[in-house]
Length: 241
Ligand SMILES: Nc1ncnc2c1ncn2[C@@H]1O[C@H](COP(=O)(O)OP(=O)(O)O)[C@@H](O)[C@H]1O
Ligand SMILES: [Mg+2]
Image (tube, rainbow, N blue to C red; front, top):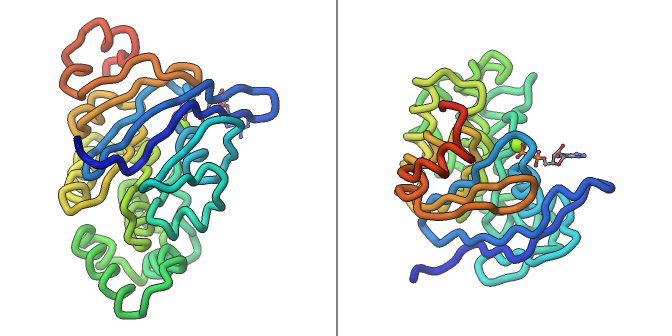
């Protein structure tokens, strides 16, 4: 058994009276890619937001590297090595690519030299960002903005990355490019919890998957098992993606 980086037990989250998470339990082992799948509105983003402290859990327990973080502040969670790259990129337009990356590193109390090393690493992963470092982030294409969002998250040198639909709105060749980067990051030691609506793409990359439906996990298993089980694909992962 490999070490567990993230453990969630019985997680429940509400938005007012809307019961968005109805008891989620899942594990993310160190060094793996785990994917959280499900239709629009299933609770995928809420799960990530609750883990990173942006939304409060009403019940349940979240443990990161053996420490309970259920009620911890978002910045404290980031400092522990858990970063959330939210849905929709949220890059800062009107700021350059470089400035966006610098902001990602502001929680990184490390020395200037350490930040410089992170920047170098990110520019090696995404040479296009290096070429455009002095351009306004608003001028980047959708795929490049996604790369910037991932790059900014990487400035914190995370142990665990939560990625919310990084393939959203991208042309197929860019989806492949992003997935390749995620694989590379993982091979270099970052553990990943990947939220996707595109099950086919996610299951090709992930080791293990959970399927969420109206705030509950309805199916889980090794990616290969989920991919090959036609009844699961039909019932939960359809849509022809
Ligand atoms: N800020 C919010 N306020 C009220 N309801 C929300 C909010 N965010 C999400 N919801 C509701 O919570 C449920 C889960 O949403 P979400 O986690 O965004 O799903 P997914 O990411 O799987 O599409 C949905 O019913 C959605 O309408
Ligand atoms: Mg979502």
